[in-house]
Length: 296
Image (tube, rainbow, N blue to C red; front, side):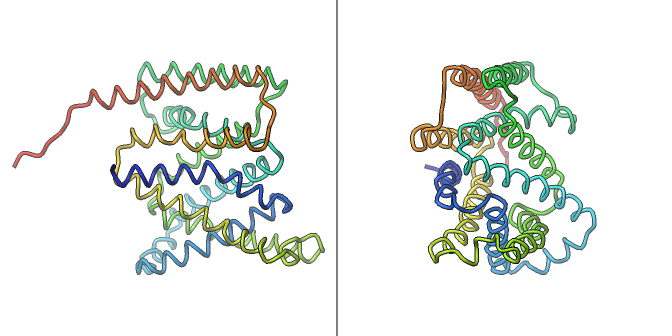
């Protein structure tokens, strides 16, 4: 099997099981856990960046105000996304969080139409409309808007859109973004410790190790994903990306016994149906494209 497929499956598998890791640190408030994730992710990325021996080029790139503006926006979006996700998992909303990442691919397509002037094929409009109906049904079943799912979907969708305009690659881009979030994270941790509400400096050794590991499990799947994108068609990526929310959904239901009544089942079913249509349409469109070969 193509190495790229293994890299993609590995990345999405890790992302799908991240709720289990976060649950191990459930005694730490979400903002403090997020701050540690940012700090240790930056440390890991900085080490990797130094080993690439292209740190000089990275340093020159970040002096460009346009580059800084784009990645500051991206950092703001991914920071909100991480915070909401960590809080949702800690507060037993894993199922609703997974819904956000089921919705995200369809939302990303719609954002491309609205903001990047991309054209949508007729059969791409159909699943977007069905998915919107599913979200409305879930809102009706909940008795409220599923704000966790929508926040995760919109922040990650806009993050992806901003990254389309980014000059830096995935490694250097994320290094810069975590670097931008680093100072606020350190200041927040320092403030909480000074007020006696911090949990990091009083934590057990195993907790400290797990906090450091939060950086590792953030960086490794991102690097695996970057390697996968270089090796396999985006059509495969589009299909494989549902591994992560599916695993998250199963973790929430089977491991942590989150409630899942018939109303939610119908709402999720509508959205899954939309994703099936979307996946089939994308696959058939890709298969219909002519194969271009080089003639020597």
